[in-house]
Amino acid sequence: MPAAGFSVSASAGSEFDAKITPIVIISCFMAATGGLMFGYDVGISGGVTSMDDFLIKFFPEVYRRKHETKESNYCKYDNQGLQLFTSSLYLAGLTATFFASYTTRNLGRRLTMLIAGVFFIVGVILNGAAQDLPMLIVGRILLGCGVGFANQAVPLFLSEIAPTRIRGGLNILFQLNVTIGILFASLVNYGTNKIHPWGWRLSLSLAGIPALLLTVGALLVVDTPNSLIERGRLEEGKAVLKKIRGTENVEPEYNEILEASRIAHQVKHPFRNLLQRRNRPQLIIAIFLQIFQQFTGINAIMFYAPVLFNTLGFKSDAALYSAVITGAVNVLSTVVSIYSVDRVGRRVLLLEAGVQMFLSQVVIAVVLGLKVSDHSDNLGRGYAIFVVLMVCTFVSSFAWSWGPLGWLIPSETFPLETRSAGQSVTVCVNLLFTFVIAQAFLSMLCHLKYGIFAFFSAWVVVMSVFVLFFLPETKNVPIEEMAEKVWKQHWFWKRFIADDDDKTNGADGAVKLARP
Ligand code: BGC
Image 1: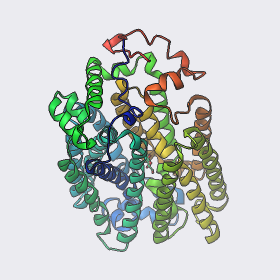
Image 2: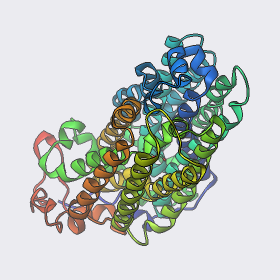
Image 3: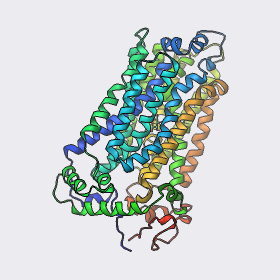
Image 4: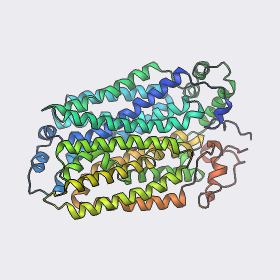
């Protein structure tokens, strides 16, 4: 059996004639707005939930406790409703992923992004105009649906439309925009905190900017050739391919997409196919990377930094200000990753970050343990600055490792036949554990107190050991050679990838591709 369809992959594009055309630039812009929207939603809730006007309107109980001195510092914000405000978005997002995987396949990437944009806009309107808690939560749920649809479609859209030689960079560019969205949100919160009593409304409404950009963008761009061809619109697909590649000479790439789509059609049950033994290594790695990414504790910081700094005795302004600092560190350190990921490799980044994250978390736990008691936040100025510094140390290491690589590695290790189902499992598991952290963090802070940082540091040890033994290096390995060069060489995973590549057709009618 020829290695048909196999070269539709990251590395193969170098053989194709492809210019960086305006349409490709517009697709970068799409990535920016999809990522910005996700990041803005991540970053906005922490600041809003620490604003008094917001608490008085929706969570008077929390407001009362916040200003009551006899309540333990660590428990001021422990309120299920308040946590639901943050976490409902992720719950909705992970449910939406399954619908999104259907629409991306059957309606196309472009329409799925448009659906995301519409969800975002309606969600933003409900949030900005919220009169009561249900209206607020319904708005968050709609934003969550937007995130589920956008995070499935935008990365897929990007990797299909990008010339191969800039595909890796574009992948991390998406994460870069997530971090810019988070930073933008904390800056907005810093400003709106001074506007009474409706500053929080402005915070929630400004999400309309990235939402509108995404919607208008989705209306303007064409769908990817892959999606058009997959849905039988062959001539249109070819015309689009010529347009985006800026050349008439698209026959080789066109034929490969055609072949890839033929093979994809033979996989009748994408999710069942994903469960085959030979697909186990990539699936396990993708799932664990998502769980570990969230158990670094990053979103405890991203969601609740202002609340956390407030808990430590920072005044409201200083708390929001510190969140801006950590947000900026997050953006800058992501750039480090773009630069170094293909030079030093994935494993080095993850292992170095493991050490840095572990040390900073332990130091934070010790300082808080010694300095913050239940009822008095006597963390002096010197210690407060030190804690912010340690939080920055933690955030920077996350941002050049687990942040982007949690998304990059699954996207480059799944073979073509399982790539899209794999992507939806990746997004779903990520949002599930984002939800778990969002919902549990404030209660955990209340019960574990400073021990929460020790808790996350223990997870950092576990995930670093996992990387050490189970995560193969994928730097500079062309996607189509992963099985040969990575999985078959790995001391543990090779047992799952049997040397049966010449056989075709596994169970489920899934076609097994022959390696050259
Ligand atoms: C994670 C988000 C996180 C963000 C922080 C992303 O990779 O998936 O949960 O909030 O990084 O920058």
